[in-house]
Image (cartoon, rainbow, N blue to C red):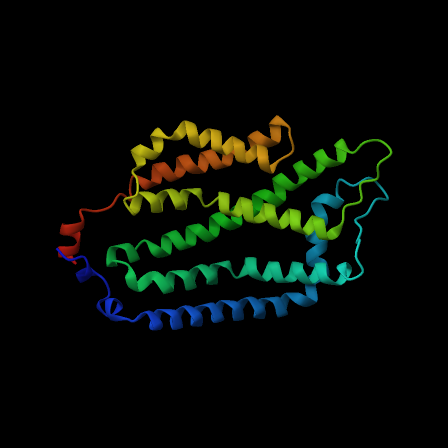
Length: 255
């Protein structure tokens, strides 16, 4: 049976140019939303950076401060913080635009899953960022402060600090998407929940490897970072049992 019957009929006849024009339109909307949010956040760029620097400032020795090693850095870094903050705030809209672009090619029963997965993706991404800010940052910076040799002043460059924390924000936000990735893999038919469960030992090793790469070399912080990834994988495997592909011919005939 043809699989196109349950898709949006007009989607199959749309030329490539139409898809490219739609993609450009959605990209321009996304960029526009980020710019609008950036303009709204720009007046608060310095408070935003102060909040971002809070976890490190809390562990610096008394009298110590962060430094700027380039002339334009004190101006550019708060501006970059406002821009990156605008991007993070616009993630729900960006994900929606991505869904709206691919939606015409989905089956009707697949579209029913989009909103739950979209909302879950946003919540999990922000949860990963919150986990990094409230747990990982204090842990890492406390370790760095304690490991500073005697006679060495810990004065972190604000540009290097921004790059470091943004990398961790992205890393943990993406890591917390593990349940969504697991569900999509199972739903697409690429694998099964049982097959993923059978690979649990490799996932555990991978989770602890990620923890080792993203944290200081101490067992406690590695475990604290590896456990959420592992547990989220287990959650994804558990939930994916309810997202196994339906009997395609029957389901599509019913539609």
